[in-house]
View 1 (cartoon, rainbow, N blue to C red):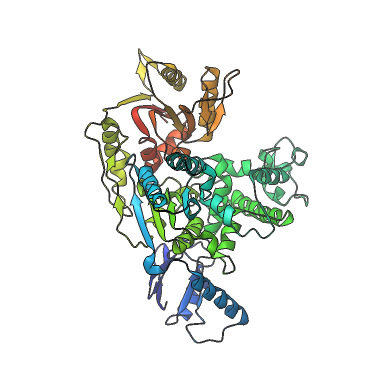
View 2 (cartoon, rainbow, N blue to C red):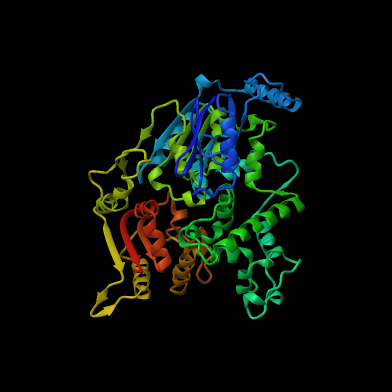
Length: 561
């Protein structure tokens, strides 16, 4: 493509090209390389150029590097360039499905409209036509969703075993299955825990938790940060989380995801970090990532980001990811890095169905890119599912007057409408908000006790899904249920009572973020802390997802800040 023009706006450096515009966010002028990039672009106006997503963003939006395209400007190519060119030519020759024979379409599925059924029907159709299970890939956001899809398909085709559907996975898991490991080991949760323990601050390095008592020591590169002294025996992870605002914090186990997103953001510090601690922890985050890279190298490990990068290289055997049918579920919550991988698979697959709902994009804080879903090039007309088979009429009305109404005001949105079934249940919404009863304020403890009684009430039939924005509140509710003799699943782990060995999945306690794609007869949204309430009220998509899980009753327990 040819570089035509470069200029700045208030927020972006805009580069006009013959194939459309490219952008690099200025972050209020604080991105350190922006001047160099602008100068580089000015020098290349009129030339054929290549842009690269140096910071991991999609190639058509953010980028950190631009260079002259040597092959198109008749420059002498290096030996290395020739080798890469040869590899790429071989890949083209290996292409199994020509461009004109490939099909790519998007399915937009508002809450309860049968998106999963639509995907399952597509798989069943191809299997009935003779496509083999190993030629189909179904990729979802969670292992639970992928396994449930595998179970549904295997039950419909008794001639196949569940293990035949080897490519029903998450994108990360699929990358691990086909990825270029090259003699290295995958970075596991155990490795992460071991790594985190290696950078724990020692109590002997502090005195009574007073920051000024710390002296800079060679034993630990982070000891120069005064704020570390305030958390004796704590890890860098814990200190970093302490400095984060409620919006960024979300789930504690997302710490690594936040850091990697932070890195890909050009090391820009979030605006709502605590002003007194932000700068120090900004440095701390960089130090954490430096130690992390050293740890991986020392123990011959690689993480999923490393693996994705390897698969995007010219040397990767692209035949490993060719499918006759490729389905990507929850596409709105796919990260930029994983989109690069997904688009590579799409480019090699005969038929690709990309499903999602941008109104339910709840993972943007962790690097997800609903914009990439909305801008995905397709060969077929978009399909919008229009009837909810799940939602009661009262809940649908509440959605339309609440988060759904606010979401419609967004400019970057796929327009869509949906309705309930003509004979849909009316449903019941019970709000247990801080209020005055008989002259006394109802406390959150009283409200949760009432919820416990509702769950135990045998007259209230059906499954239960209890959600909260944070892991802390989820674990609190789980302990409350355990104390009251209620066996349940907490974050997909069975919590048994007494001698019980198995637990029905009819009662689940989990975060809203992990409830995507779930449904239950009875749903409870619990906001037991000010942090829960703040996070919920700030995110229309989070509220939209939470309030659309129920098939009958919805309980809303909210603490007023």
